Length: 225
Image 1 (cartoon, rainbow, N blue to C red):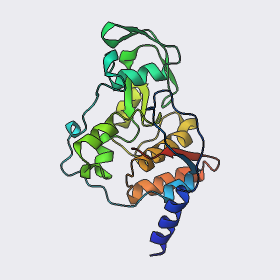
Image 2 (cartoon, helix red, strand yellow):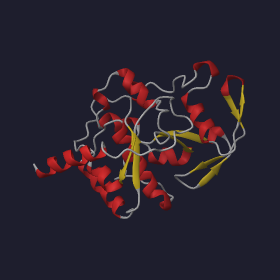
Image 3 (cartoon, rainbow, N blue to C red):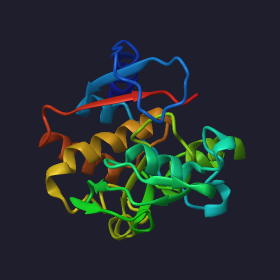
């Protein structure tokens, strides 16, 4: 009972802390309120629930779709790669990308070929399914899988690091570049809050342990439309 009251209080607090943050380069053009809270408080605001994998299929999340501008021929994956390139690639007909340079923050590596990158769902599709997306409509799952409304939902990283992560949560996997652990955990929590996803007890314990080592880290998010 006490724990439920505390979670309710934290959830209320999250709604009272507006934070004016710059809009991500590849965010939808829509008004939205952005919130920022200490990571420990954000974790306490995650609803606790057991994970349920029953019925999961990757095809339940349609991706990649035509992205923000269907007329440009670039799908969501390509739009993320273009937005996150530190040296922009040349966009050829059919949205084929040539050249460019990216920083894969999971493993602290430079990548110079789009084909060597994966666009990672910060909270993997299977994890999202386990955490509440199984109850969503097909349209909402598609919106989740192609979320260009928050720059932390989809991230361009080396294919090797993304495939090492697979569908694991922070209790099972953290980036090999240990100096980005705080950032990664904050972005994970932000994505779950954005989409109102739950967390299980083991995941919450792991996130809380990370947060204890990241006292200055905050979590910033906007609720998904």
